[in-house]
Length: 229
Image (cartoon, rainbow, N blue to C red; front, side, top):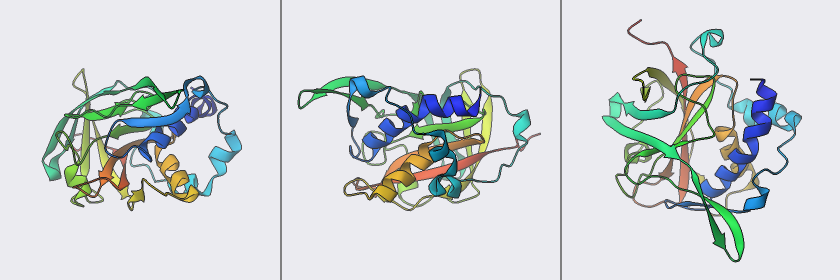
C-alpha cells in the first residue's frame, strides 16, 4: 500500500490513541474526543514527513526492507529473553462511552496481557507494531521496563497465531514523558513514537515509575535477522 495512504488512514487514529495514553494514567485509556470526530481530517502529508521529531526517530534498519512483507498477522505472544518476559498479546480495541455528555472513545489496555493496537502493523511486517502493557496493575507485564532493566541491543520476540516469530532489536528507550502537564513538544514526541512508519519496527509503551503512573516510556525496536538463519 502507498505509504502516503497508510499515513492518511492511520494518523487520525494514532493521534486519538496518544491523547488517551497521555491523559489516562495506568487505567483504561480515555480519549476526550467526540466519536463523530474519529475520522477527522488527517495531518497534512508534508507535516508528517518533514517533522523534526519524526525525523529524529529515524533508525537504521537491520534487514533489507525489500524482503519484508507489507502485511503481517496480529501478535499473540511477546518475549524479552533478557528480562524473562513471556506474555500473551491480545488485540487492544476501543469502547465508546459518554463523558460530560459527549461520546468519546476509550482504549482498553488488558490487565493480564500486553495489548496490540489493532490499527498498527502486524508481526514481522513493514510499519510500526504498537504494543502497550501495564507496569503497576494487573499482571504488570512491563514492570521490568519501568524499572529500567531493558537495554539497547536486547532482543524482543514477537509471535503470531501461526507460530511465526519475528526478532526485533531494541534501538532506543525514551526518557519518561509526563502524563499530566505534558508540553506540546512532549505530546508531539509521543505521537512521533506512535506514528506509522515505512521501516519495520516495534514500539512498546508502558507507564513509569513502577509503583504508580505519572509518565510514559516508549521503547523502539527494529526488525532484525533471525539468529538461527
